[in-house]
Image 1: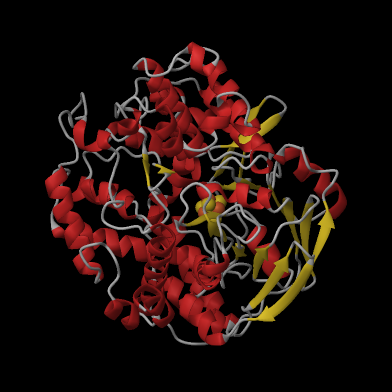
Image 2: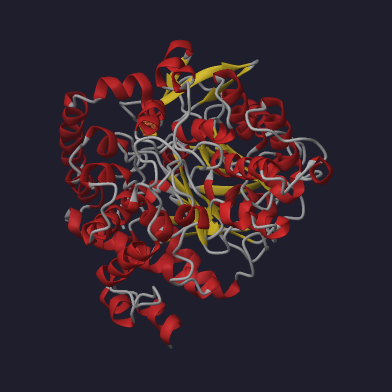
Amino acid sequence: MLGYGKIAYVDLTDKQVEVVNVDEEMAFKYIGGRGWAAYIIFKSLDQIIHGTHPSSVLVVATGPLDGTIFKGGSKTTFAAISPLTGIYGDSIVGGHLGSMMRGAGIDALAIRGASQEPCYLLVEDGRVEVESAEDLWGLHSRDADRKLREVHGDCSIATIGIAGEKLVNFACINVDWDLKLRRHAQAGRTGMGAVMGSKKLKAIVAKGGGEVEVADQERLAEVVERLRDQIVGSTLYEKWERYGTMSVIEWSNKAEALPTKNFQYTRFDGVERFGGEAVHKIEEYTSGCANCMMPCGHTISVGDSHVTVDYENFAMLGPNLGLGDLEAIAKANYLCDYYGLDTISTGSVIAFVMECFQRGILDEERVGFEVRWGDAETVYRLIKLIAERRGFGNLMALGVRELARYIGGGSERFAMHVKGLEISAYDHRAAPAMALSYATCDIGAHHNRSWAITYDLEVGRDDYGEDKARRVIYLQHLRPLFDMLGVCRFPWVELKVDPNLYAEAYSAVVGREFSLDDLLLCSERVWNLTRVIAILRKGIDVEDDTLPARDFEDPIPDGETEGFRVDRERFMELLRSYYRLRGWDERGWPTREKLLELGLEEAAEKLYG
Ligand code: SF4
């Protein structure tokens, strides 16, 4: 396929690398990014024992718009069987990694095996080399990045921290530290850092400067022109430039959806102390991903370093822990990055322990010290213990589902996860579409697949109508499509840019005509494929497409949404509509007919024989 189709298969056990050109049919069927990742993992499924076993395959996939002149064109997918959930997991990261990989002539990596000694991958000039990382192992993510940059100069670097080395189930991957012109970003969700750690893979360095091949550069330039006009012409542009996602703190609080004290409450007093405006006042610089014209990397200083902040990090490490001090939240955020931990899962697991103390389920004797809401020093201490897997932190490193099983005492009912993935920062008791999004998300409860809460606000917070299921399905196809193309979704989400432009850009790049509907069909195919992977790995079905007991049983205690909770019966009705609209059966399995309709013959064969 023109310009996009080179996968490097890397075997770390015997240090072999083979670069292959992708079969054109597969390239178009799955587009790229998470689409390619899901397909590669599906094909290897029989050999994979678990996510952090040497048999596991870690896919690092760019998308066909990565590295082109298209705006916001630099997103990269990290995907594998998740150590946290046991099903397909992925995390999408911005920054410059994707464009550098493509500029280096490699579109995706499929990494198998495990090295005996610490190593890193160097992607350069169409080749991938396995290099020694003996002197990097044991370093924090930022320090490993700095050391590698001294050697490789202008490049993009993905590193794991101590948490990844120690196989914390929600370890993240950092991309590029402290570069004012390049956004510092994380592949946070589903424990991809632990997968790297299990392979003794400390880092991936991409050093690219080459041109990315485009079938019709003139047409692409013309599409970019229209995209640019829509971005700068948007009435929302100025606000986005000023605050990025941080203004969502105030929005979420007002909407009574801001997780507070482990999702017990939905509002927090004093958000103005750490929300969008407060961050804007002390911001040091704003950085962006490659080729972005609406940068959102708002960066503030923390000690001798910096942290790039966003809504999810601040919500989960702030109000969700009863913490309202900007400096303290920023420091907790920084420590998560430094040690290499997903901020959402870390915030959730610490909040869970805090609530266990509140309810007398845990005490000083079991944990080793007292844990109280809003105690910043304890938060820092727990982050370190989790990353280093020491003391009680070793149990917390398993994630909230496993921790609750271990603690017992009724704590499972407020362990805030779906399928093992900690829920991101939107309370959904007064938002049925958002609740359905979390319950059905293919990697566990993650907001980025279907951020449907705005739809709830628009059409009614007590509305469980079928339209909500329809909306969630549409979002579950459209939003991941950006990840498959390798571009940022924010121009569409935040500034309402026409999504058809993305189909036009893809057509220009690959030299074949695709409508948005064609691409949405590819995304639906991938959604069904990840579902089949979840069924084959863990027997996922209707029992798993659910929410923590808290959502059904604990009404919102105050505010305008006081009394709201997810109505179990109406929710089940909504879920049944969702299955029907998807062409899935009552168990929540895609029917054979549906899989065949989507061209997933191999998946149909595996599931139904
Ligand atoms: Fe990256 Fe933010 Fe720009 Fe998107 S809007 S490309 S996340 S800097």
